[in-house]
Length: 525
Image (cartoon, rainbow, N blue to C red):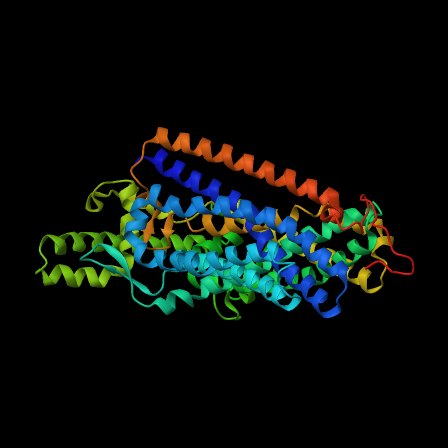
């Protein structure tokens, strides 16, 4: 397989996915903030909470529209750029994506229309129900997508069929309740809630610093910091659980994230910071906390976390076993009555994917040299430095956001948030933080899975379509240009309406718009 074709296909999918995920977290988070705001409006009848729901809903709608536009492309790419992948695992991977389209996407899209156009046509409780269903739709959409992605990380509930030469679904419920998928789902949702909270908090802080629409901004600020505090705590707790499931299913990823080269006595230490030296398979220096990694990664004090060197040794055995699996499968397909070949295949079935890794270096696995086998083994370990540092930047940002939410929540309890400009400026400066953390999280999840599209089952280099390098360069340039244009439009519209503030609603109650005349003796709403 042409290496440039594989690399360009990966780059194109990575670019479209990372662009798409700029919009997704804000959609997931803001929609529940809208539910909170509208619930307060229904319970209290105070018009300001209706205005808050409508104003922040306008920004939510801009983001939602561009998120949908960028997301549709991703599903088509499985057929255009990853044809063999779609053929090999389509029976399993296609099911959650189809359910997402039929159940979640249409639910979300239908109710978002009612949300915007139903204010004067629905009663307050009915419109609140529309908002809740819109929120459920967006979260269900994330569920099914993450079920599909979780199966790629931990392929349970499926089996390889040597007759059809494809993976086939064996247990649908195992796919849905896959521990990796469920922890990834709740962790991603929590990250989205933090993103939505930080967006509302930062924009509200900007209003308070400029002393405009103060009461509107203070209420928005209060809801955002309370929702954000709960969400930030959830991200950290659920991130820890996600790390545990990684340790259970993907020991290679865990070792790379933590730069664990040699298996340490249990419980392993946690490297707070280190300098990985990949050329010599060691850390030049490290600042470590004893026991901490063992407790996080294994939930015990007696289980070891294998180091990269030990994993390489185990993978060498699995590659040799995979060679036998490929040879036996080919013999069995030549003669379906060959009971010996079938028995040999069944004994090595679990390592078939490791045998397929060799096809990147040699056409026939039985002809592989020791050097080619070692290259296949080395390819099973992702580069350590990008994984190590990405994880620590992500975690550092998570704790910074937690501290910010704690301080802002405390300031709202004392009802003096506008009297602390340093805290408001911090809230404003932290606006990009959740997006950076979310993108790093996806990088760790996807880059750490390499060299597999389906972990331990299907290598990435076998998954791509037969395309020309020129067509990939052209489509990649087109996607980057088009998605960058969409991002510029998003930023322009968001900045425009954020600057206008609630005055964009045209109610006459906010700074920057003409005030309606008030009848003698009457009070404004």
